[in-house]
Image (cartoon, rainbow, N blue to C red; front, side, top):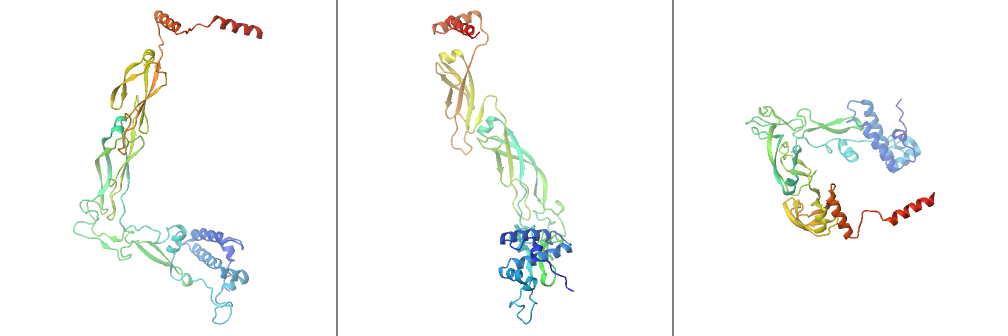
Length: 388
C-alpha cells in the first residue's frame, strides 16, 4: 500500500486561505531549513525538502491549487484517471525538477551561499588583506603636516616564485576534477527528484590547481611575512580621529590579485593653550585689570608664533577678537581658518593697604563705593522690624 501523502497546507504550515506572499515566506523558511547543503547525509531532511518543494510547486500555481483544493492529491496526480490525457483534467501535474541546479534557485531566494552562483571562486584573483596602524602627533604637526615612520608586519609576494607558489622552473597542474574552477557539480536524489548542487573541489581545496613542487621559500603559499618600515605623509589640517589610507600597502594579494590597503588612524595630542574646532583655533588670553581698562599692546600666541595685538581701552571680560588666517589649514589645501581670542580679566587677589586706598579713591572719582549707603541700611532694618 503506497504511503499516504500529507496535506500540502500542513506540509508548509499554512492555512488554506493563505496569501501568495505568506505562502512564499513559509516555503523559503522550510526549504532553507531542510536544504541538503545544510544537512549533508541527513535522509530525513532530504525527504522533507522534497516534500516541501512538491507542496509549494502545487500551491504556488493558481490552477493547480484550485484543482488541489477541489479534488485533493488526486486533482494534481498525472496518473489519475484514464487515457493518455494524464488525468481527469487533461494534462499532467507531476512534480519533476529534472536536472535543475538549485544553486540558481536558492541564490535568488537567499542572496547566494547555495551552489556556484552565490559562492566566490577561491581560484580567482583576490585582493590582499587591509591592514590597520596608528600614529600619534602633536597639535602643530596636525596643523602643518609631517612625516612619520611606522613599523608593521605584513604578507608580501614571495620573490622566489613571484607569487605562484611553485618551485622556480615548475608549474602547477590544472585540477582534473574541477578543471580549474575550484568547484565540482554534485547530483543528489533520483528519479523525478534529481537535483544538482556545487561544492568545493576536495582534490585541490578550491584552488583550481595542484602544486606538485611547492616553493621552498614560501611553502607553496605564494607569500611571506616581513617587517617593513613605511614613511607616512600626514597631510596638513588633519584632525584627531581621522585616518590616512595608503593604497597597495596592505597584505599581498592572491592568485594575481592586488595588495590590500593600509589604514592609519591619527591621534592628535591636546595643546596646553589652544583648542580646535574644525579649522578654527580658540585661545583664552589673560589680561590685567589695568590692561583691560587702559588698553595695551599684547603678544598673542598663535600656531605660527607670537603676534602683536592692540587691546582697546575699556575691553570687557569675555570679549572675543578674531585673528584672520591664524587658524588650521584646510586639509584639502583651500585656505586657513581663523583664531579666536577671548579676553579673561585677572582680578588682583592680594592688595596692600595703600593699594586698597588708591582703589577706593579711584572708585570715588567714578562715583562708586564699596560701602553700603546709610539710607539703604536703615531701610533694610526698618523692614525687618515691621515684619516682627
